[in-house]
Image (cartoon, rainbow, N blue to C red; front, side):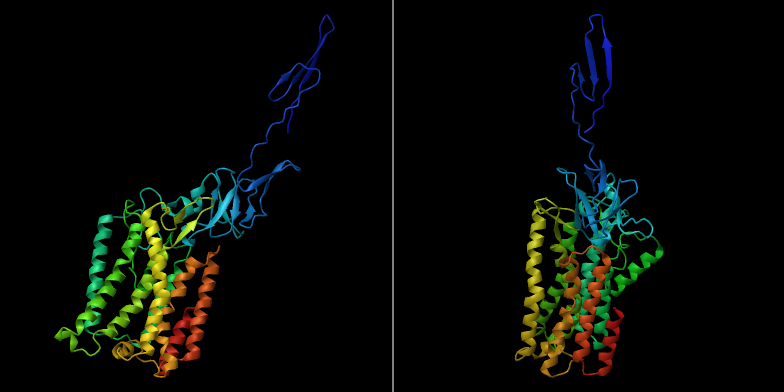
Length: 443
């Protein structure tokens, strides 16, 4: 408390003494001064007032705050943390968000990412704003992978390209099924490499920034390896993130539906029934691709986060809350789909492989090149399923730094590599060597 006093004494003819006491808020004519307590101005967010020293001090005791600046104005927080301010208490709160959505501004080699309470969107990557940096700024639109906001978007061009992709998906699936193209075992590990490297690269903090041509080329190369669109396609801001997420599930559904219809009709159409395996080798090849794309989409569906005291969850990719029925529907479908793809489908496939009485052609297509001993047949299911933990880790494990996520991916690669080196499932040893070498490159 502060009291400013200014006393002056005046003596009049009647020798009466009047004491005038001036304080911050009152003027007293009492003999005894009146003391008035006034509140000290509040500290900046991330600081707290120390009554002993009488100054604002950095809340370094909070785990997410790494350090404070020299002017005692701003704070530096852990990488990967989105920072908000509680309207009721003016205290900072922290929520982990998608790493590429943040722009970590560091001071030289010192630790921590700068958070400026009076410029909250400065913590976001280029073109982003809002809670969890999940929204695009005005004039920017979301890309088809929901990971970037760009200012050169055209909904018409994006929709036309999307329609072309859907048509090509059906046409390519029919070609693969008709010619019953078996995937060479030498290429399985390369396909896996391309898909996984894209998942790991997705966490790059430079993904949203693209400061130079080298960043654009790296993104192009990773997309080509992962059989994704080689260049970013974005939609105008009037097309929301949930709608784009729903659009993402259509191409793999079309590929799967095309395969099922073809195989069902293959035995009834003479031109198709002349091929002994009825397109099952083609189904195996299609499965290796669409399984990963299904995983990408359904884990996007369930990627909602709780932010501080908000009663609703927020869709991490575009900021809509669970008050939106579309978000609730997405989450429910996503959870059911995860159970199907992670548990039910692998079990059914395993039963088909180990009980092949009426499914001999199917089993032969999926176990082609694998040692015939039953102790190795499970590897054909593992070869498909092993994509799941790499996609799931980004959602299931919330961490504060990109490097930790990458480390977890490296440990998963070591697990996959160990399983392969121990089992050596392929009949030809050179194929086992190729797969081991490719998996080692992921490290």
